[in-house]
Image (cartoon, rainbow, N blue to C red; front, side, top):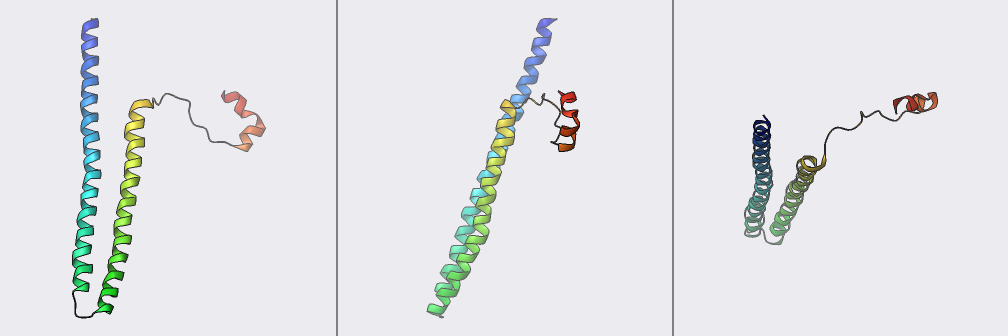
Amino acid sequence: GINAEYGVHQIIHTIEFVLGAISNTASYLRLWALSLAHAQLSTVFWEMVLVLGVGTNLGGIGAFVSFAIWATLTICVLMIMESLSAFLHALRLHWVEFMNKFYGGDGKLFIPFSYKRLLSGQDEELE
């Protein structure tokens, strides 16, 4: 009867909640992994390019070249990674958080705007 239907309804909501919690955790773990990769890459760029380049016997030219390589790699790779991280986080917040809480998906069928349909009077028929 009613109690069995209520129990099934509660089980379904519990499963959805647990799956949502696992999904959110995995999503934040992906962002955490991106930040770890960023930190490791910046350390590698610093130690392997700039420190080794300055430590060569080339003097000022070696320091200048190694700094140029370090700056280029840092800006190109790490800034792209940070931009990707920010984009993924915004996308995750929009699609996972917002859509789960507020989006119902029970609205009107989307019909793109058309001057032809507007001038022919077909828009009044759709409403």
